[in-house]
Image 1 (tube, rainbow, N blue to C red):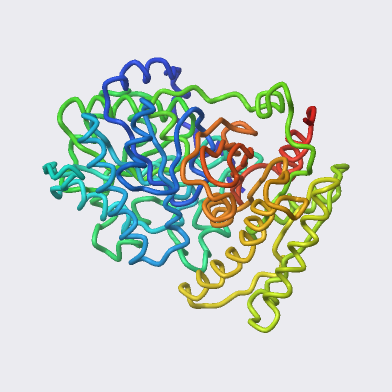
Image 2 (tube, rainbow, N blue to C red):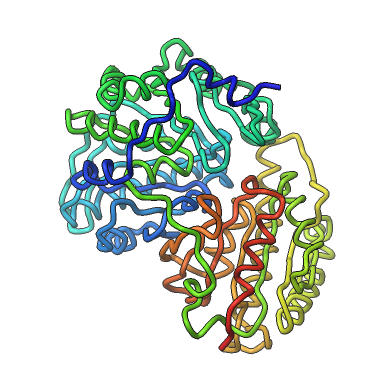
Length: 494
């Protein structure tokens, strides 16, 4: 076993750079447009808008909020490569057009998984191309493009134990540092890989387009001993969209990198970022938001008298353990299982889903309902077919949510819906937001647990006003889900 202490042996201690230092430097920086490939990228932030549509008007609304970053939920991790590229292209064009109309500059952030799953290099390649292209606004004016110098790879997510040291990305649990290529996430049916060193990983996933030796590395020594100026010096060596692997173990490491990025931008260099969730917070100089409590979520009047709805689609081992912990807890709950084999059987799917809807409505009248997919994962070797199965199951799951939200717990439009909705898993969270709650615009209220579980306030759609919690499948401890459900179940009712 290798410990994180052993990995860090010989390195200087973490810097003491504050969020305020970055915030002051970032005040005149371009607005970050964060293309989030599943909804969990908002976990470390608060007070920022998130879109599930990306028309020029939607981006204009987000930019009108006068915030340092806006999130666009693309959900591209659930799409095939062609669809993912097209969606990135659409967002980039709408964002650049809206920014030009608003008289602001934007920088693109491609938010991927901190365990390296997702469409890389496809998504950043698309953004690099779009930044270089001219774009026409709704009013008919033309915005000229410009070249991107580097693509920064910053997958570190210290809140959840994902860190990068000397180019190697680790999953840290209870002090044990496991190279990410040796974890279950590297065996993903669609986005699997074998390398843990980010330089080797780039060579692997680009199929040799970039050699590992050509990938620059902003290493921990540069960050902790050289500071922002040394970071900027490394970044300014990159041209032509070259990937740059970035180390980080703490939030303070990320802040030093952020200052280096801002300095290099002042010197005329342009970047696209491929990051885990935390770097956006560091790059805008945001302090880690305090976890929300029931009074903050619901206000003095409290939430609805109905129970909350917990929707679980993720199949990773941690989610299964969290589900078991919730079921064994003292939280009053009705457990309803959506059986995947029945959903995939055209002869049985409709009747099964209707039965699940009825059981969920009945359960919500007296307490919280835990709606989960059957735990036996249907495995196929073909990555595209695996995605198709995931989408089919997710469509059935969120179809249940939408029916309950539309019809109310009492079965009639206008009657009370769930007190809250929690979605567990990336695809599940995205589809529950867009299809289940019908939201296109929301505000990120903040975390339910420090840095890893995010609550949104829908600004439109039939789920307007329903507190919605985005809960990734691979974060937290075994009791994290139980903690969030219990917290949202507390407080007065109206």
